Length: 241
Picture 1: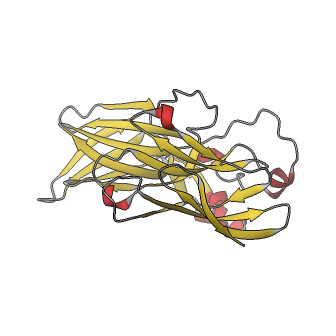
Picture 2: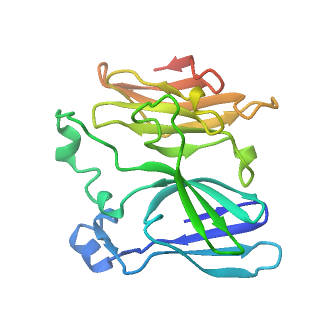
């Protein structure tokens, strides 16, 4: 997994590999071919200005596996990375048909959780923190498919949009305020299943001035529609079946 700031590329090598023999036995399903490796996650930082590489950075068990990086930026001697953490062992069975069709909601806790890593490029120390949740919304930081205003790639961003799967029956979209989590917002409708959200920026100066677009499946009418949410208020702007 690779992220970049204005001056650095950050490469994370997780202790997970693809077992091609096992994948062949599992009808070439890549997630079923995942296998663990010994050792911690290794981090390499490349200076994009001269190609020099900083190695010897590792974290155990702070960063074990990640499905997506949100963004990365520089703060003094530190590189900050927001990412969706997950246990690699959860991936092979995530799309198990029996689990998807189960109506047992229960007390299911998603396995992915947003975290922030601070990497000191001088001391090579890595600190990992959870995102804040002032409103104590149980699932707000269990988001996936994170998306931001791409004008902020490589520099500090404030807002993140993402998908949440509370369980196989309840899904939604979230707007996360990383500077003041009291402003976090959620869109969810029973039996409506949104896909990965995309933020489309307007020409305004505000970071969240834009539209959040997602394709949503309406389980009641068995049709999909295009959903457009206001990037600021997270209210529905319009939707089309």
